[in-house]
Image (tube, rainbow, N blue to C red; front, side):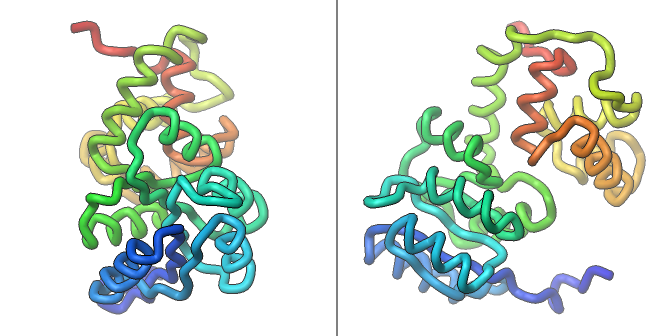
Length: 228
C-alpha cells in the first residue's frame, strides 16, 4: 500500500561531485526541500561506490567528470553491484556523448546543474517510481538522436518478442515520450494497468529501463521519425 504524499518516507540520497563548493551547495539545497534526505556525499566515483555499499541509498545524484573514477564508470559499478540504488546524473555537460554513455551505464535520470531543487526532487521520485527522470530538453534530444540514427538499423513490422497488441501499443507511446499518466489517459485505463503492461513488456523484451524501451521501440520499427 502506497503512503500518501505527505506521509511518504523521504528518498535517501547520496550526492557525488568532485567540486566541494558545488557538492556542499547541492546538499544544502536538498536539505531545504521535503521528500529527500541526504545521507552521504562523495568527491569521486570510487568513494561513491563505497558509500553506496555502506549506506544503501535509494538514489545517487552523480556528477560525470571526476578524477580516479568518473561518473559513467561509477554508475556502471553501482548498478551492477547494488541494483536497488538508482542513479540520476546531475552534470554541467549535456552533450550527446555524455548523455548516451550515462544511460548505457544504467542511469535512470539525467539533469544539468541549472536544474532547480524541485526539479531534482521530481527526478528522484520519478526514478523510484520506475519512470525516467529526464529533463524535458534532454528527453527531446534523446528522441531526436534516435530518430536520426538507430531507427534505420532494424525494422520489424510484427510485434516483437511475443508482446501482446496492448503491450506493443504501450511501448509505442513510451517511444513517443509519454509518461505513465499520459498513457493511461490516452488508453482510458488506470496508471496501475499501464505499469502492469510496462512490467510485462520489459520482462518479455529484456528491457532495463524507460530509456532502453525508447531505443527498442525505434529499433524494432514500432516508432518512426516524423518527416518534416
